[in-house]
Structure formats: structure tokens, C-alpha cells
Amino acid sequence: MSVIRFLRGIIKPYIIVFKHAISKPHTIKYPYERLMFSDGYRGRISLRFEKCIGCGLCSRTCPNRAIEMVEIEGEKHSFPQINFGRCSFCCLCVDVCPRGALFSDEVVELSVIKRDDLIYHPYKLSNPQPLESILKDLKKTITVQIEDGRLSYTLLRRREENV
Amino acid sequence: MLIDEILGWIKLNLKDLIQIVLFPGIAFILIFAVAATWFERKYLAHSMLRIGPLHTGRVAGWLQIIADFIKLTGKEVITPRNVNVFLFNLLPVLSVCTSAIAVAFIPFSSDWIIYEGNGISLLLFFAAASLTPYITLMLGWISNNKYSIIGAMRVSYVYISAEIPAFLAAMGVAIMAGSFSLIDIVEAQSRIPFLIPQILGFIVFFIAFLAEVERVPFDIPVAEQEIVAGWRTEYSGINFGVTMMMDYIPLCTWTLLFVTLYLGGYQGPLIFASQTLSNFFWILLKFSLVIVVILLFRSVFPRLRMDQTLRLTWKYLTPAAFLNLIITAIIAYYYPDLFGLIGAS
Ligand code: SF4
Ligand code: SF4
Image (cartoon, rainbow over all chains, first blue to last red; front, side):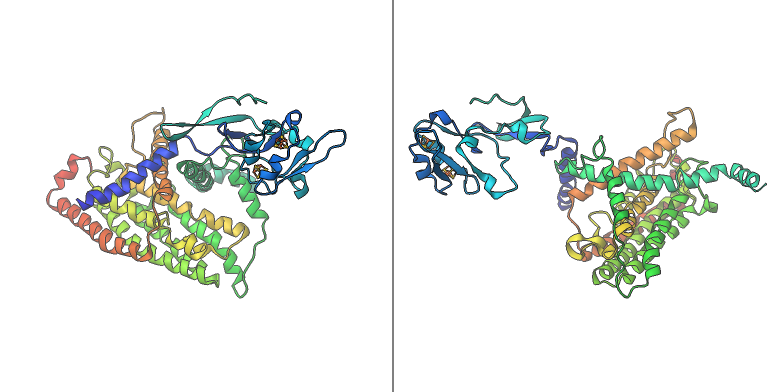
């Protein structure tokens, strides 16, 4: 019996790994392909400029004090300015906003060279850079789906942005 | 005058020259070393569900190995203090040469072999292949580094303990074929490869030759997690590249011997018009399949400890190889007709 168990211990892992070797890889070619996350994904925060009423709730609720209300010349009220260096992407600001002016999308490519560039002025917040212009080599986007408890990547075209 | 003489000499020895320079000689071994490095990276990556080399070269990053080679040649060759500079730089090259010699005795077809060896090519193979660990031992010793010397000692331990069962198992094959000549051994397998009648020897030889070529699970001499890079720790630049090749050249020669002894070597049905070409096809096909099986071990099995390896080889493999040898000898002495049944002499 123990001999059979011993042989099974050698052959079984070998077969599993061999199956992996001839199946599709789980990793993707990142700058050329990108996983698109589910709808509720908490990524970059953006602002719908015309909807904001300057109530400042977002600034008050932010646990990291990442949001500062700034005055803009020619506008009647102040607007939120987010420091993504402090933001933890908790999306409390999105939830608390009474007008639905803040929203989060699935873009996570926020790295910059200077730390000051992480501070997004309301104008910059309201003009989110599309993913294609951040990842210039992007050729294909891949949507993650969960089927029968297993993660599977379905090759779909990028969903339309519902701005 | 001189040119005519040289041309005449080349014409006279054309076949030998092709064998030595192209196939199965230098070019074949070097191309195998490069291709196997690339294939191993890509294959292991896929077995771990990764993608592996991708960018350099259009198809599956095949130029990555060339790029690495160029990078290695461009690097500074650092020689440690207090070493014999001449030997330190000579030994890597020497080790590659000695380990490549063994391929000369492998028949790729009944008339395509670099040196027939007067009917003892199996013994000559073992003699040539056993030179390599000496050089590895010297290489580790001369590096003046504790990791190198530990790695070199491990090479000698593993090699000695694995060489004996491998040799004993190969003797079973020699008894069955009634000859030490590798060509005779292959011809004796024209009906059934020795894999079936010599199944015990087959298993012993397979495990033992994995240990001799330092593949996982027996890569103890270069165990990265324990002793940096084993005997090649002090080497840098192109010397390091040459020692990396040492991983693949013994793999090439020993796998060819394994195929020749147990899987029928170049035997196979005629598929090309020329007998020689179809012999090449069959031996290379079997060779590639064995390589594919062996390379995958690296992502399946953990490394054995030194004492586990020694226990395996001395306590299990050597007695099993003796048992196989004794059974084969008894059958050869009392029932020689049985060998005739399966086509062996
Ligand atoms: S996501 Fe959270 S941390 Fe970031 S700005 Fe909004 S409230 Fe602050
Ligand atoms: S973004 Fe929303 S919560 Fe923040 S100030 Fe504007 S309206 Fe108020």
C-alpha cells in the first residue's frame, strides 16, 4: 500500500503541473493587456464638475483628510481637490456626496514622477484621463468573471464608459 | 599547393568533419544548450501558469537567451584575490570541453557516430563523462570561497553515489546485448526497447542519471537557497555563462545515453527516404521527449537533502541495480534463448 501511496505522491503532482504547462497562463501581458475589474471597483476618484454644490461633505468625511476644498475664481463655491498620495480609495466621499458628483472608476494607473502631481485640482479631477492615454501600448482589455467559484478571464471588448 | 593539400584532406575527412563540427558535434551541443535554456524558462513559466520570456524576439522571446549572452560577455570578469588566475579562467572552458566529449560515442545512426570505440563505447562514455566532476571539484576548490568548496564537495558526493548504480544498471543492458558497443546495443533493441525487459535497471538508471546531471530533485551542488550558486559562486561575466552551459551539456550527453540504452536509440520505422535521416529523426524525437519530461521536474519536486540523496542512491538504487544485474546474468547464463525471443543476442 505504502508503495502505491509513494508512487501516487510522485505521479499526481507531475500530472497536475504538466496540465498547467499546456494550459493557458493566468498572468497577462500587462502593459499590452489589462484586466478590467468589476463595476463596483474602487479606483481613481473623479468629479462631475457641474453637479458639485460645494457642500464640503466629502472633505469632512474623508478619513485621510485627502480632500481639501479649494476656491476657484469665477465660481460661486469651492470644489474638492484630492491628494491621491493620501487617499486610501475607501470611497466614503463617493458614498456621502449628496449630488452624486464624485464617482470612482477602475483606473489604478496613478503613478507620477513628482509627489505634487498626485494632488488633483478640481479641473483635473473632472477631466479624468482615459485609460488608453495612460497605457499607450494597450491592445486588449480582459474582463474578469467568476464562474462556479473559479476566476475566469473572458476576452471582451472594453465596456463603454457610462459617464 | 598547400591549399590543394588542405582541400584534399578536407575532402577525405569530410564526413568526420561534419560529424565533429555540425552534428552531433559542437554546433549541435551549443544549439542544444541555448535552445534548452530558452525552452526551460518558457516551459517552467507555463507550468507555473506564467508567460515567461516575451519581449525580446517576436516569437515567445526566443532572442532573450542571445540577449543574456551578450549581456554576460559585456560584463566585467572578476577574479578573486589569491587564486590561480590561469586555472581559474581555464577550468570553465575545460569543463565544457570534457563534458561534451562524451557525445562522440553516441550512435545517431549505424554509420553516423564520431568514434565507434572499438566495441567498448559504453565504457568510454562513462570514462569521458566521469571527467567532468573532477573539473567541477577543481573549479570549486580553486575559487577560494566556502560556498564554492561546499558545492564542489557536494558534486563529488552526488556524482560518486549516482555513478555506481547508473553503471551497474547499464551493465545489465550490456549483458543483454552481449556487447559494450553502443551500436550493438541499439541494434539489439530492434524488436523491443530494453525499457521493458530491463524495467528495474531503467528506473535505477533514470534516477541515477538525474543525479549525475544535477537536475532537480538532485540539484544539491548548486542549491541556490543554501549555498548561493554552489561551485560557480565566484564566476562572473562570460565565465559564468560558460559554467551555466555546464548545466545543459551533461544533460544532453546523458539523456542521449539514456535514450540509446533503454529507448531503442535511433531505432524506429522508416519515415524519410533515407535511413540515416529517419534514424536522426527517431533519436532526436526520443531525446526531446525525455528532455521535456526531465525539465518539468524542476517545477514539481522539492530538492532532496544531501543525506536523503545518499540514502536513496546507496541504500536503494545500488542494491536494486545489483539485483537487476544478477537477474540479467542468471537469465543470460541459463536461458540465453529468452534473449533471442525479444531480438537481443
Ligand atoms: S476615497 Fe476615501 S480616502 Fe480617498 S478621497 Fe475619498 S474619502 Fe478620502
Ligand atoms: S463633491 Fe459632493 S460632497 Fe463634495 S463638495 Fe461637491 S457636492 Fe459636496
